Each structure stands twice: as C-alpha cells, then as structure tokens.
Image (cartoon, rainbow, N blue to C red; front, side, top):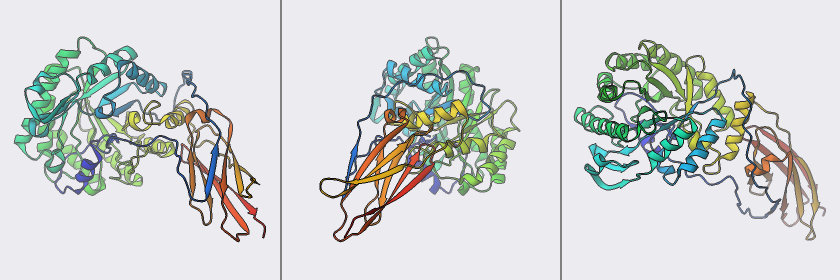
Length: 480
C-alpha cells in the first residue's frame, strides 16, 4: 500500500522477504500511491466535434438501505493514507464514516501515522513529543489528523486500526538488516505507547487495534526467520501495552516471488518465529490492482496462504481486495466483486485498499463508484442490465449533423458515453452522480464533416460503473 513508486521498486527487488501489499492504496496497501485523479466530468475539446449537455441537478442524499441478510461477499474495512486527508475536520470525518457505513464498512485502517526514515521522524500525523525529539530533516507534524479521526470514529461506531511508522528504505532491503529492524521498531513501540496514553481512555471504542505498516511479500529467499523476528519487535511491546488490541498486517502476493506452493512454505516458516496472539489478523493484499499478480492466479495463492495461516492457532485470515487499477483509476465494480468471490472460500472477511480513496462518496469525485457499489451491497446483483442508447440526428442551421443520444440509465449508473466516427477522435463525456438520479438523459454532439463526405457513420457506446458496455450505430446521409 505504500506509494506506488515504492511498490514498483519492490517488484524490482530480488531479495526476498515477507509480503503485504493500499491505497491501492497505494497502494491497497502495498499497492497504491495517493490518488490525485481528476473529477468525473471531462470537458475535452475534440477537433471537429461540438457538444452540448443539459444542466445537472443537485445531488440528492441517498437513503440508508433496509437491513438485508447478505449471502454475497462485501468489504467491511478500508485503508487510508493520511496525507490525502489532512484537511478533514471532525465533521467531515463523521460524514465520511456515515457514507462508509452505508455500505457496511465499520473498520478504518490508517496505513501509517509517521514516516521514520532510518529511525528519525519526517512526517507525523498526531501531536508527538517523542517524534519532535527525534526529527529528521524536513520534519512536519499534522497534529490534528489522528485525534480528529478517533473523535469522529467514536461518535459513529467505527473501529480504527492505527498504523504506526513506515520507512521507504524498506523497499530497498526489507527486514534483512537487524540494526535497521531494531531502530524502526523502537520508533513504532514508542509511538504506540504515546498514542495509547493520549487517546485510548478518551476514545476507547475507536482506538481498536494496530496496523503493521511494513508490507511483506512472498519471495523471501531465506529471510523468513528475520521476518518473524521483525514482527516480534512490534508484537512484544504491543502485547505488553494492551493484549486486547489486535494487530493487522497486510502482506501482498506477487508472481515474481515464486509459486503459490513456495509462498505457503515461506509463510509457514515465518509463523514458526512470529509470536502472533489470538485475534491477530493476516489480511493478504490480492495485488490485482497493483498488477503484481494476474487475477487468474489468485485462487491458487489464497488457497496456499490459507493452509499456511491454519498452522498458526488463533490467527485470522482476511482478504485485502484492491479496488484500483495500475493507472490509479478506480476499478470497475465487476472486477472488484470477482476478486472477493475468488477469495471467498478461504477468508473470514474482507477489507479493501482503498474505499476511502477510490470509491468514497465524498472524495475526489468518486460518488458514482459509491453509488454503484452500494447497489451491489444492497442487492448482490453482479451484472445489472444495460441498454443501448437510442440515436437520432438532425442538421443544424449551419448544415452540420447533430447526433442525439438518449441514454437509458441503469442500476449501476452510467459512467461515461463515447461518440465515435471514422476520421474523428473519440469524444468521451463523463457524468455527475446527480445525473444518475434520472431514468434517462440526452447528450448531443455536432460533427463537422470533411469536404465532399457523403455519409457519416457514428457509434455511441455507454459504459456503466460495473464496466458493462452497450452500443448503437447510426448512418447519416450527408448528400452530395
């Protein structure tokens, strides 16, 4: 889940180690960098094409769905990378959490709360006297981030797993340097003590567990013992502090690290050395979004890791299903569903890297994905029907053909419409969530034919938030 550049660097690493992988996160963990995608409305100007769009309505608030007994897999947790949300107030966090609860999410995993290159603090996301006394160059403190999250979470019934420290040099040598292991784990242990003393009494339900921020991955090449010992450098002080607070780690799978059978044996060795407690959670990133693995290989790796986890009594096995793509776009809901279904025979529960970044109703223009996933959450429908657009045309006062496409909305919601014609660049129009409250809407595009053209063949394709497509064609006689 760390920054994408770090993740890609991880793939290039030939040394081996444990695996976790945002958000997306970032990535899902391990797989995602912070997202900075543009809003869902595009206004590209295409040569030779004019477009008109009816005005959008104000978005209406969605009503909470009635209680449903679900027999289909759904995520119950999301990761967040703190740098993308430093401006969120307590009120904004409460809205964010209420939107998450609309789709059954009640677990919120903060990927890290400090960056500690070589044991010194760079960025820290709560008020830390320990960090201030151990600064790296460029030190910054975002003192309000963690307390605001915890206050809002306490008010809304959200359980927070707090990630401790993360260091980018992990991607260069992982846990193969014992002195480095000790340095950064000392930072993490001191942070946990400080965070616990500052916030546990005030937010006892919200401050629920800890997240092990270093993303391990298969392909350890003999470093399994060091990996287990590095985990213990966090597990031991956390147990001493409060044994009731579980630790969640999220390794990722990568085909570059070897076969599923090899991954199983590596993790069995790690479990021989790591002192996991009853209730700790091994939450494997499926790495489909980051591209570390093909979705067709996912079943074999999850089956193998399930066998490995079963050798560690009391350790829970969850899936971290990534909801983004290698281009840092939100993954279509159909792919996201498929990932959860593949993991379903092996895991107890699901989180994702990262709903807050890629599907959230209130972040970065992702309300359409929230709407579509909420439809799946409420109904279990894996493939809503999508109708082709209805096309007509007319000539405007300048004699140019204007194609009108009546778009029939579906339950998933139309994400975008593309007008295509030979000799023209495709024209894509994205739609706001407010438009998706209508049963139908109309888009018009005017073409400027080349001199002497006799016909214009236009194809209009609609794509919904599940990734389904439907097309219609029309041929226009331009005359002599």
